[in-house]
Amino acid sequence: MATTSEESWWRKPEAARPIRIIVLALFLGQLDSFVMALMSFSSSYLAEIGVDAPLTQSFFTYLSLAVVYGAIMLYRRNKLVVPWYYYIGLGFVDVQGNYLVNKAFQYSSITSVTLLDCWTVPWVIILTWIFIGTRYSIWQYVGAATCILGLSLVFLSDAGVDSGSGGSKPLLGDFMVVAGTIFYAISNVGEELCVKRKDLVEVVTMLGTFGMLVSICEIAIVERENLASIKWSRDVVIGFVGYALSSFLFYTCTPFVLKLSGATLFNLSVLTSDMWAVVIRIFFYRQKVDWLYYLSFAIVVAGLVVYSKPENGPDPIPSLVDHDSTNGDYQAITEGSSGSRDEAVVV
Image (tube, rainbow, N blue to C red; front, side, top):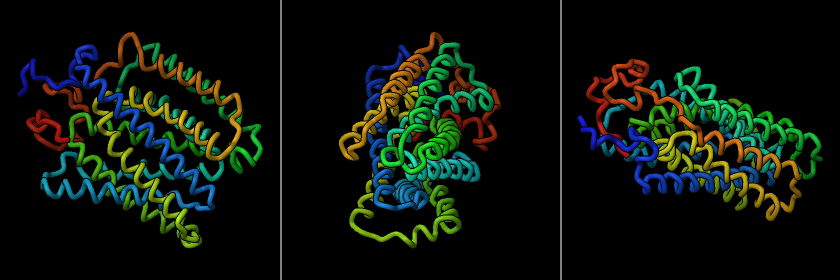
């Protein structure tokens, strides 16, 4: 059992964390933001050249995760800490989120899709409040409400966008993104529960494995014709490879950011991907950006700053923060002895 002086950094107050940990979290968050922008660009690029295969895009991502991190797990020969059937649900909701968001690029602009991704924040608050019992401060609720206000301006802007500049059906694409963020929120909450004290390699490996299996099943059902109609070329291959590489980096960095800082800093960090999206839309696609996008972005930034700077942070989850707690809220997921709860996280 670790002594008080040897307690893990995430059990200490924010002010007590070493500066290098905060800097590392910020760096990884910005790296996540950059590769998220690359993911959006790759999906938008594939949509521009007539490729409509969002499930296939995700398949290559999950395949790479399963192969790379699965090899590490096999080398270690460690037993699963979390039962495998929990990862089925995690993989399923993650695939649905990726499908809806990637599909939205067929109908809406890269700017709308990346900005509306921020809708994950209020969903995370709702899910953690209902299922985990996390209590948030009034400032966090004000911040989330401000974000929703800002995001609603995207719908107002896209309602007046002609098909030549913002996508064929921008409102349909916007609603698909919002639906996708619900699945993203479920996936993020489930992933954070696992990575806080569990083996990060196990989480990424199992997410990749079951995400790949779910993708194969859904491709066989809904995407066979679209996949068969693809005219493979160098541009198509570049689009798929670009998405696979960027999303592999994204899934690699995300567990570390969630572990180092939690969902708050993670969502704040990936917000900057919207700025990259605006740059891409202006300079690569030569499209005009409606002034409401800039106003929406400013409001969302203000909301997330308020959300991430509460007077008192959300109450910690006993079973995740206190290793000595006898609270049984999450004992079922580990299916292990109490001794396993004190093992160090293997990165």
